[in-house]
Image 1 (cartoon, helix red, strand yellow):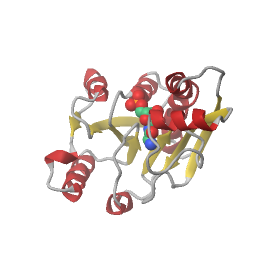
Image 2: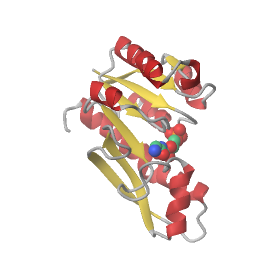
Image 3: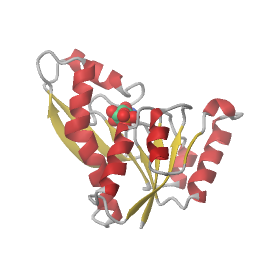
Image 4: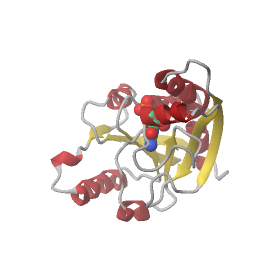
Length: 197
Ligand code: GAR
């Protein structure tokens, strides 16, 4: 059994997709052992609690500095026996110390086709705003390993999604989630759990 911990910051629709695919058997050999949000009151925490998955909020603000915050994160993750950390809409930056501690054991979903619209400042709706501003006709999502850089780790999988006339950042975000993110991220976890990657 691959023990997975999911880090979140917001609504948690990607977390929900993972929970649902474990429940319906599309992700096998996997147990979600912990969900941690860096934002108190994130709806993702409720999604976890509804399925009896241990969930908690650890806000950087409640710690002396980032280092103390990360130490507590590591304590929680290691305490749960985490094999793989999944960043599912986790919008805080992790230090090199943290990413080295879990080398090749952290994956992230990003809502564009990396190397487009990624790096510092590109997160959430902002990514789709920039894609529409640029006028690209195709965008998508990427699952990648997390290293010390921002969105710079090895790419695991990508899926393209068409931009449509009249798209707003919100409609585009929704289509990228439905057609790419909610499929790619569970698939990557299943592939890792079953030693296909
Ligand atoms: C998702 O679109 C995810 O790809 C994005 O935030 C959203 C979270 O939604 N992540 C990033 O932008 C990371 N740089 P969710 O909370 O409903 O899963």
